[in-house]
Amino acid sequence: MNKKLFLPFLLIMLIVISACGNQAANDNQTDSVSSNAGQAVNDVTKSDTASESNVGTKTYQSESGPIEVPANPKRIVALTNGPNVLSLNGTLVGVDEWTSKNPLFTDKLSGVKVVSPDDLEKIIELDPDLIITGTDSKNIGKLKEIAPTVTYTWGKLDYLSQQLEIGKLLNKEQETQAWIDEFKQSAAEVGKEIKSKFGDNVTVSVFETDSKSFYVLGNNWARGTEVLYQAMGLNMPEKVKADALGPGYYTLSSEILGNYAGDFLVLSRSSKNDNSFMRTATWNNIPAVKNKHVIEIDSEASSYSDPTTLEYLLTIFKKGFLG
Image 1 (cartoon, rainbow, N blue to C red):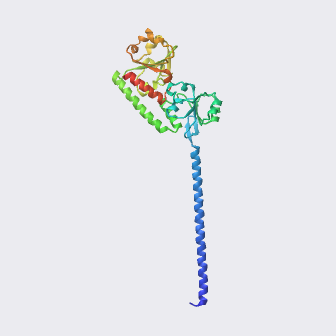
Image 2 (tube, one colour; image 1 turned 180 degrees about the vertical axis):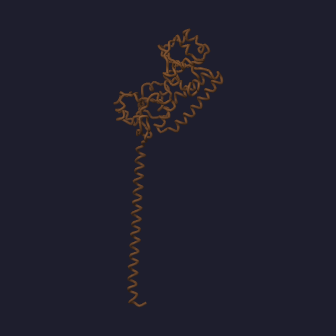
Image 3 (tube, rainbow, N blue to C red; image 1 turned 180 degrees about the horizontal axis):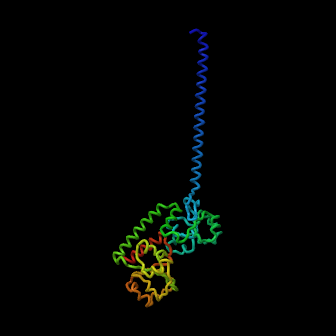
C-alpha cells in the first residue's frame, strides 16, 4: 500500500477505536449508575418494610370505628373482658376487680395489678400498649391519651362473637374460630346425650342466690346459661321463658322458687354465704330437689362466658346430668 495512503487510513482507524472505547466505558458507567440506583431503591424499600415491621401495628375495626393498635400487644390493661384476654393467653398488666376475684384465673393473674377507669395514674405507671374497656366506662378520652383504647358495649355481641372480636384484636382470630367450632360441637353432643337419656322435652332452670335474694336467669346471663340453653340446646320452663328470657334475669322470693323450677336445677351460689334455705321445706319439696337433680356451681367462678369458664362449666354439666 502506498505510504501516503496508509498513514491517513491508520489515523482514521485509531480515531474509530478510541471512540468505540469511550462509548463502551460510558455504557459501563451508565449501567453501574443504573444498578447502584436500583440497589438504593431496594435498600430504601427494605428499610421502610423493616421500619413497619418494627412498629408492629395494625388497624382494628372496632364498633366505634377503625383504630391503630399493636399487632401483638404485650402490656394489656383490661378494664373489661379480662377473662376473654386470659383465655387467649394475652399478657395482662392490669385487670378489673371482678376478674381478679375469679378463682379460675388466680394463677394467671399473679403480679397483675387491679385497676379501675378512675386509676389513671396507676394505669400510666403500668405503661400499657393496649387498653380494653366498656363504652360506658369513665375517662375514655383520657385513657386514649395513655394508649390505644378499644371499647365494647356489654351485650351487643353474643358470647361467642365477643370472644371472636377479642381474637381479632389480639391477632388470634384463626385459633379463636377453631375453638368456637370445637366448643359448639362438643356442647351440642352433650346436649344430645342428655335429651337421649331424659327426653327431648327435659327442662332446666338456673337459680342464683346471694343469701338475701333469689334470681332465675335467662339464656345469656352467664352462670352457664349460654352453655345450657344456646350451646347444648336444652329447654327452660315456660314460666322462666316468660319472665326471665327478655330482661336476662327475674327476682324471686323463696316461696315461689318451685313455680320456676325445671326437671333439673342449676344452683349458682357462694359457699361463703348463708345457705340455710337449702334446709327449708320449701326448697326440699321442689321435685328436682327430691330427685337429686340439682347441679351446684360456684358463683364467683361462673360469672363470665369466656372459653375457660365455658369449658369449666361444660365439664360440670356433663357430669351433673350424665354422671
